[in-house]
Length: 322
View 1 (tube, rainbow, N blue to C red):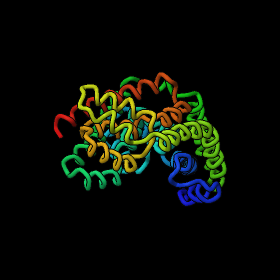
View 2: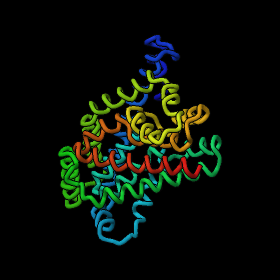
View 3: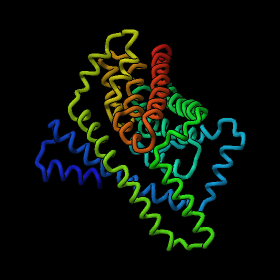
View 4: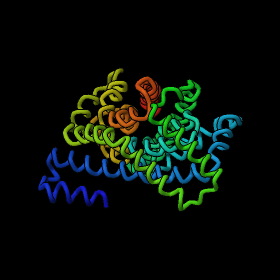
């Protein structure tokens, strides 16, 4: 429905061609902006209901005090792998987890894996590159989320969350305590939950527009042949160069897989191509723009730095074993 509206608006009402750079960029912008805002509102509302009725404090206490031997990171990464979100679409759920007080490392494990791996991309990978490559891609994406979440969790970075998020957490806890003490029924809680969800949408609206505009411009105007030509030479710096060039881009895993096939057909090493794909879907500038509302620049830098290092290492490893 959203895609049909974007098509009607750009190609019908505006009269732009679906083959033009401007048409493609604007279609991408309107589709992703509407999708993310609707998703953010729905997930924020859902997490508000969850926080109101489930013992979040007990869950937080369980996750922070029990020895789970890393299973919490595995479950968060596995959940990320089965959610068909791009990096920007994952952030609403990330905000919901943080709002609910889920440990930051566990939340990061989800945020890392969610854009990297999904069932559509796995099916496409299987058809294009075979079972071995697909298993390595999916397994490494989940492992990256687990290890990245574990490391980020051990750095005790909670103080680097934005004041906006901290205020949301405080308001949510205070409101839930009042509801519990007064035994407020759901029908009376619902308006406050909807109002808070709408407040979250308004809070990130500007960041969504700026982030998606950057991604739309790159999506509509940067030709894939440029990347294929630059990365096709077998140089030692090919993998880090692929990751650096990928950061300004923005796409979901399923959307970038066909591009990776083109890269490989034009001589780009498979590991370098996969590293490019992981960086596109997991380290995009639009994602960083959205995260700026949630955390400070220090935490964004640490998050991007850790994931960039891991993707580069994986790229070299893929080139060695594939």
